[in-house]
Length: 153
Image 1: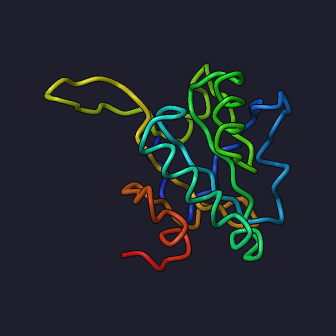
Image 2: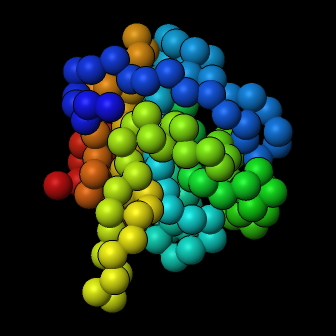
């Protein structure tokens, strides 16, 4: 798949969340969506990012945003993570990597000199018509909402 760019139509997505509910991109037409991809539940960076979104959730809602997280973790893992940190938004369990692949966030990463494939922490801000408005590839986990609102440089 070609690399996604701002101004392109966002790929359709669907998957089950931590409550077993089917979440589809079509559910959000007419709303802005913060679709964020993260590597793993309950790890330091992913927790900081999720908690920043949680702490600013009412501001995001007031600005017309829905928030949806996606990782390869299972529904059970997502449920535990969401309950532990009182996350008010759906976390899609993309165990097949379909959404991850469609959004091009499965990439080669390096940790301690070792290369491996994994999810590149990335956020897509999608407008009311399903068009990618903003792609944040250098996520500031503790100030992510500010990045989404364009306040963080």
